[in-house]
Structure formats: C-alpha cells, structure tokens
Image (tube, rainbow, N blue to C red):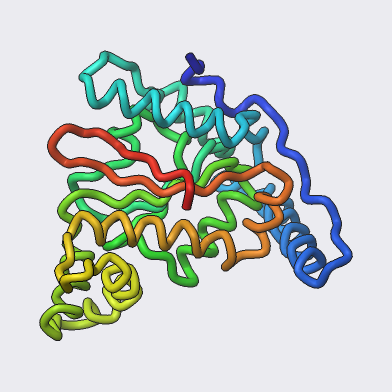
Length: 251
C-alpha cells in the first residue's frame, strides 16, 4: 500500500542524449522544458519542487488501488486540508497526467481517491488531444516528471455519441461542437462492426485507445521518456453505474 502523502519524495532521471534526429529534437525539447521550469522558479504558482519517485507501474498501481477504494466505498482521507494547501503553494509534484472527459459525472480525483496536487488533469469533451492538450501533457511529463499518462474514456460519453451521429446520419451541431467531435470520428469508424452497426461503448474504448496510441508517436518529449522507461501511457474506461475503471495497457 502506498502512502498518500509521500508521492513527491524522489528524483526523476533526465533524458539521455541521442545522435538521431528524433533524439536530438527530444533532448532539445527536454532542455527547453527544464529552462521553463527554471525561469518559473521566481513564481510561487509554478515553483519547481521535488518530483515523484514512483515508477510508471507504481503510479498505475496507486490509481488502481484508489479506484477500488472508490468503487467499494472504502473510507479514505483525501489530502486537501490546510497543511496540504500550504505545501502545494510552494510547488506541485503530481504522479500522473490524466486526460479525461469534461463530463460532470467523471471527476478524476474522486474516482481515483486522490487529493490535491496528485493528478495533473487535462479535460475536454471526448478526452481528445489537440495542440493545447498535448502541450499540457508534455509539461506534466517533461517539467513535472509524471511517470504515467492515462487517457480515460467513460460509459455514455456524449461527445463520442455525437461523433457516431456524424458517421451514421451526417449529424450537425451548433457552434464549434462539430469541430470538437471530428477527431473522434476515426475511432468511431474503427469500432464499426461487419454488419455496419456501432456500439457506443466500443467507440468509447476505441477513442481512448486511439488517443493513447497516438501519444506514443505525436511527441518527442513523450517518446524520449518512454524509451528510457520513465513513462507509461495507458487507456482506460470508466463505468458510471458501478464506478469501476477498466484498464487497457496494451495500446
């Protein structure tokens, strides 16, 4: 069992230099992130602190344990009191990046039984990753030292359902909602059965897995961390009824 308040007591390793073009780019970006961290040292809101010592597998185990506690109603004490707030005012050291949906029924800290400062969260409808989201994920990994990225889909996702309407009936939506669901369409198409039918839940899982899989190739910063076994990227699906999270580590 992991101690709840001892997730920020280690040091993260730094990316090794590579002579390949991709490796050089990754090293350069890592150096850029380091410079960002140093330049922010005078700002209380972004002041660097000791990074988590958890490995990717240990970080994943903490989330699995936390979800089991949440699912079964186990009593737990979240780290969110006055003392914890004072500690976090000096800097943050989350142990996982959570890419989740904006759905109000899926609050990451609650369903993983975590407190303040433990999860670096990126949320939007459909848990997709655009430039802004990718930059946030890279910050969480490259600057804050998170060893784990989780892409979390969920039962009954409205954004995925909207993408299904586009595929099945040329659905249209007001404002820029149509643009928001467009990145989900490829996952919906991939989830289509031989008879042409599409299950919403299959599409939700396909979308989470697709986003997680693309993160492996979209970012030199993430690639460098993965190659050095400092980072794991997984997909997951949250069940609204029973609170269970199903994990997809083979993305």
